[in-house]
Picture 1 (cartoon, helix red, strand yellow):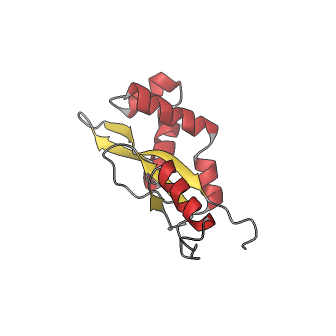
Picture 2 (cartoon, helix red, strand yellow):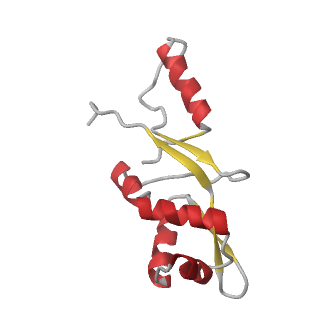
Length: 131
């Protein structure tokens, strides 16, 4: 799913209310995913499908994102210790989150990579009547 709009929840609310008031009409090409990026970030957030996005943003992975945001680990190894997760499994998850644009893996000391959360919120719009 490549369509997205960057903005805050307030932007999304204003957009939706403008449609309801008849000031704006929703186009079929309008974004289906709204993203509120972390401060200073500008990466695109993309999912292969709505299902892939929902799976990637599981409760376990959202807890991982909160841990990264709060503890700011200097490496994936440090994050593995903090979470109690196996480093290889953690790296696989972080690569998927990075490919989606939700996490950035910055070069750290030596061969280490430091995970950084780049998206604060993701809002999905689902048309229940569309195929």
